[in-house]
Length: 300
Image 1 (cartoon, rainbow, N blue to C red):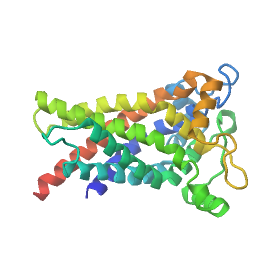
Image 2: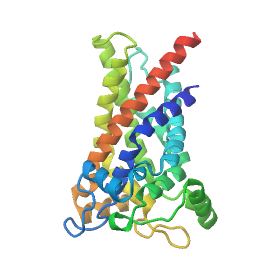
Image 3: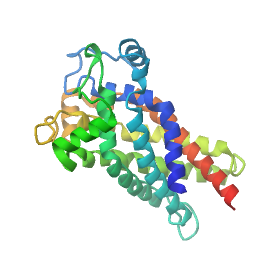
Image 4: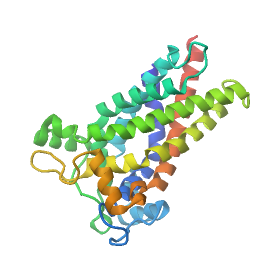
């Protein structure tokens, strides 16, 4: 049940935040490996990107890649939050004295995140391809011509096999390790601290909300450079063997990006990341916490 509730919580959040994921993906690919000022900026900021995509691609384009996004969230977060929930319920995240251990929490979050992200990697790659698809006048990054999720997975599988489907999977892991450990560690630590201070009544929804808001800020700051590199790794064009033509791996993507676009290139789309990841973190952790409370209330 922990896995199911975790997956459902993440899907609920994804429906609301997917348009921001589309905007974030486009902004991260804009001016890829080009020096600042040498390319046309189709998307000046989050709000301008929303208006531009809606006007040129149509409003439906803001929900591009929703099917793979939902499937990825269910798989990735079902495994990630479910595994973390089991570790928490088993008492593995507390010291011998019974206090919450941030180090154990971070390690459990990272391990759970790696499992979920690696298994869901082909879905995330296809989601990136679909969300980058745009009309030629506002297109950024390499443009794949997929018709949908199943067609894309089938085509990549037939052309490049399992290796092609899991292309970029290892490069995506540092992003998840940093994001997942930061998110779950700060969420649990803040919740534990607020409970000790008795600011809110026990089991109050406000407790989960404030802890999730704190967690969202920490995740965005820690994860942004890895997120940019990961998007570019997944979206790069490939040769006949399915090997990326632009980047050799995550380190190469980070180095090339910082060298060509400067430090700000590493934080492209951070506004969209904040507006997307903040609410997504808040909503998914909030739904997860509330679903678990309901489940344990009615099953005891």
